Amino acid sequence: MRVQVQYANRFAATIGFANETIDIKPETDIAGLMRTIAAKYGGEVSQQLLNEAETLQLGLLICVNDQQILDPSTHKLNNGDEVLILTAVSGG
Image 1 (cartoon, rainbow, N blue to C red):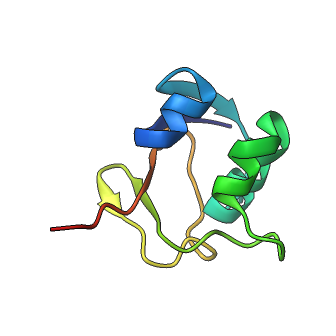
Image 2: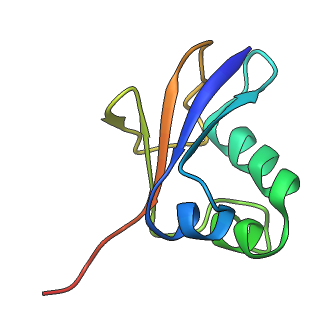
């Protein structure tokens, strides 16, 4: 199964590109995809995605097929889904 992943803001800058196709197992949820990406790139990317408990960092915004996902741990991905990963933007 494959998903298209788009990296925005600091993720694109850290990884060095803005999108890629990633192979995942059926029934993978968003948290599983984040662990796959963290394992693939390690270091700074892993720290930006996951906390010490291996759960998603606060402040991540995840969209699947242009819909913001409020509970990434329960959202299962489907073949061909487009996943956007970005950090929350704040300020005045």
